[in-house]
Image (tube, rainbow, N blue to C red; front, side):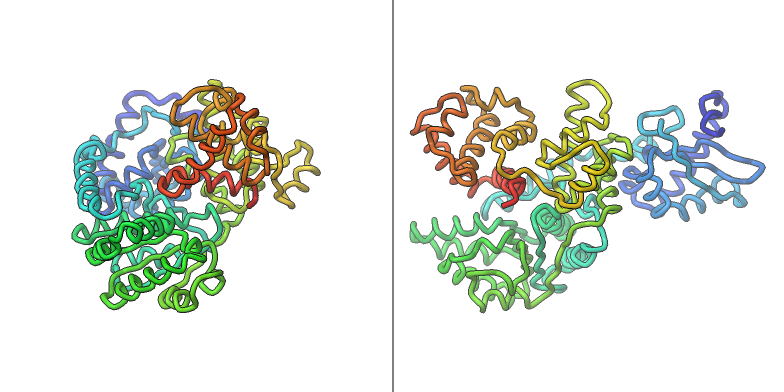
Length: 492
């Protein structure tokens, strides 16, 4: 009934709601962070003021915003309404789907609170300054999109998240070292990057360095070959916070382990913060010196496990919110039932569906959802019995190379024809060469067969592509990330 009434509001009533909403926001902004208000309340508006029952009704676009608004703003919004409108009024929230897009009942929060667009000017200058300071070390590897605010917390990652925030607040004082572990795609890198970004923002005088362990190995090997190891070690003297990702790849690297052992000891002695990540706990690391494993466990060891069903849905809703998109809740349930182990894969699934929506200019339907799951390598059927069987086993096709080609094409927004073409565009070449490496390494295909699959490439071209890709993966973090995603799809 109320939702129907909204469509009939006249200009006078809309102006009333606008006025109360604006005064409420201004009052709220005196206690709450502007960015937090902008994030959660930009699509929230007053849809009714019930003078009889003394209730102000706030409309929200979906279930996720409803949950967040109640969690973060229920008490403070009521206090603001009592202050700026009537102290006898309470508040309540209702879902109004049309608030997913711009609506007459919305208020321009940026304009109202004078929120500056710093991400294109001031923020860029700040980031460039940080890049300049770190360029003398190992290059910039931080991505500003990874923050604590957009990291979804669930029961089995709460300890790791809390420890990460404590480390960011007092680097070198709390949990040193901090060792995070968990399987692929659960957010270890996100959490490490969030720590680095937060420290750089709160402690601008500190030098923070993030290194995938493969890059650390390359730095040390190159320094040894050029007889400049002392110079590299001196760089670490000026580093205050060191984040090393995927330490399991130190296995069998005896010289690097010895050097890193010395670096680690020096950081501990000087009370400088170290954060490490791995796919397993320290005691289960293989071919790594016992003395190094024992040092990894000196501080706090925190694991990150797969989220439960409800949390997977919350993650999907959160990702949709950041993209200003919306999908039918039933479709989110289907994705959450199938995709159990990998948070990164949940976002990948959304990207595929939203790309299809944009390209085909139509709303996503159930068929699209199942096609997306097939693209990701899941066995899906549309019968209830077959679906339950597939969900229970959660199996993927692991030996179908054509399926992998389709997945990689979707991932890079390319067509299979482009991958098999003669095009030398960077994104096409990278995708094609990754597939050649995977074909050789995991499908045992001959060089001739690989070349034939990609438009008749010659023996030498395939060898060059494979060798070149292996080198680039060690140096290019983005390419290494993509390769890891595809290997994970194969179940390796």
